[in-house]
Image 1 (cartoon, rainbow, N blue to C red):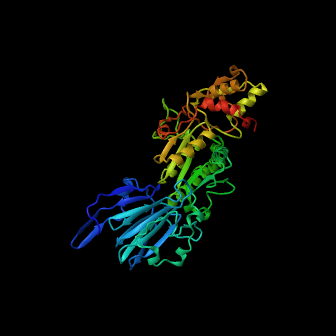
Image 2 (spheres, helix red, strand yellow):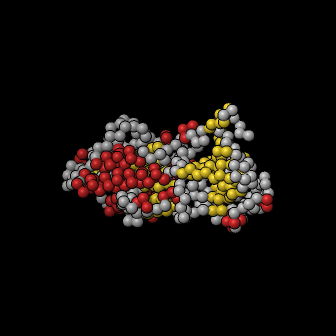
Image 3 (cartoon, rainbow, N blue to C red):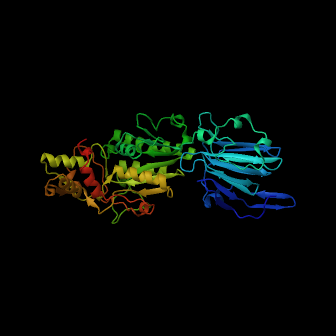
Length: 474
């Protein structure tokens, strides 16, 4: 008998992501009505907006029809239109809950959300049972599936009707016991632009994790028309865009302008479309250059953008495109230091060669080391705070580029007084080529990301560690 008058309620099951739902059903002498899937109400109560693309119905005319235990690489919303089932779900994903079991009866007043990799099976308890399920991917022979035998002794499912008394397909009879099951791996993470400074830091951060893949620009052209078919994208849970055009002065030239718009806007736009169509989380790295630097305080994530030059304009445009992706993290950073040529190595080299540099002292910000950005990206993907933009720079007191240079000189054993401060306009007065405008204030507020549980490292401490690292001589 279908229960009427329930409140829409989510019930946790003990298997992560597997959620039982009590559904309001309204009935009278004519029959009944229910909202079997109501995106707005259900997502408000915590259900992931899983983006179903197909609705399937399995009609079962006899009591005891038994089907199972299949784990597919997609999510399901399981319910019944008529009749009643005994459902059994077994976690077949890699991880500590592998093998966990949950069972429940499902009638029209109940539904269950079955996450990717959780094995799904049922036994009908009434004749003429119509079992229905929404899925967020289409069946594919290239997808990774996993199966468990209905009689598995470890799962020990208490079937209401003994399996010896019901008809089971030959395929289901041949499925392995739990000890022989191939666990469903987590959805993959793809890092694009993996050959750059941030890409190399991400390689180090995720080293040894088989579900994380890396692709350089040469290995994956994100602006190619073949990008939609370059991967089976439904197997990916996140894309980290570590590629960018960062030659801020060269971007002011005709050729540089084209390259900057291609890398910083067309590339992210292509990734945004892939992410939106496949329910992927897109992580994109932004810049302090989206601001004009005129604020008298640290820039917050919701401050209006006002880029000064071509580079900043392309980064702002890329951010706007990525911001349309339902699942996105825009990581806004500044003054990035990583492996390869950078300001810190340049200053250390000048110090060792006896050169006393003039360094700009009217641009204020904080250094950000790529190791810290990579650590922050891992945190966002693991902790999954609300999607949106997060500032992520080094913490500590802001400083000028001249102050940073002095800290480098002192850190490598030289007199910090050898560094002379100068204004931006004076420094570039004799420049031979185009010079991009720089924001005077590049300080980004860090309160928002701190509230997620991430603690950015103090830039001075990171600098000391960097100067002691062998990368300084790369």
